[in-house]
Image 1 (cartoon, rainbow, N blue to C red):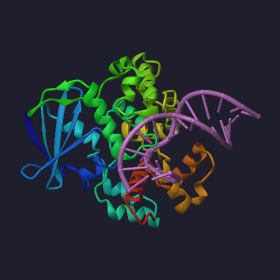
Image 2: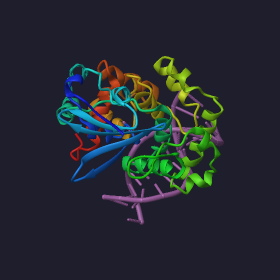
Image 3: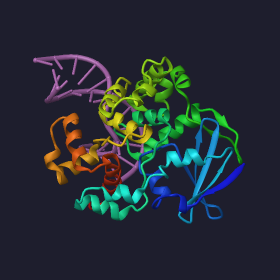
Image 4: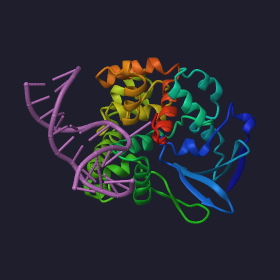
Length: 289
DNA sequence: CTCCAGGGAGCCT
DNA sequence: AGGCTCCATGGA
């Protein structure tokens, strides 16, 4: 096992590890918390196990490989966060979100697990999405040997494509079970290439992602924002729709496509970042203003 | 009991 | 293109 540290001085602006990993952007990390060791987060990327812990504004890490480059990319540690936040619109609810969440960053997680995660996300609470992603990992993912017992990687499309709809329903996926299987087949057979999608402009890429089953415009936006490093997507989920009604009523245009363009214009140069702050704020604020 | 959760597919006009 | 209806599951 290797260990190391990513110092705060190398990160432009602050970083809140827990909020970033537990705000519904990614479902691929497990939190392990003990009084002796503190709060660690663990994920598996192919055959690499990566563990991180916040310390002194930076990150301690433990891994079976040097994860520094991967972490900097996944957790957006090279982005000048104060610069991003200063571009947010001068709107009361947006400013309230900024005040509450200091070091929230928008992740770029491995795209295939992100795609399946957000297919599962339809009409589900965030804790349950994480539970289902974990169930998929632990039931059908490859085991990677690690310190105190094995850990599980997210199963690849080839594996998921071999599963029956009934096997997926047994995990609690409900009506999303056939979506997962059919999308896995499309990926396995390379009917839709994620690499090609990623090379196209935002709206084209979103349209192409909806060729997967269980992927409409909202899920596609989440995949582009949290898995493919696009800056434009503003996923219009129930929370953001509600925020539009209350705070940006003129952006409501009837259709997803038109409303998406209108709200994007109102959220500054990095709409996806603004959206993530808004979503995290509204979802966790009881007064809901 | 009802209502809701980071929606989308299938089918209708 | 746009509007309906149905879809599993678990928690409040």
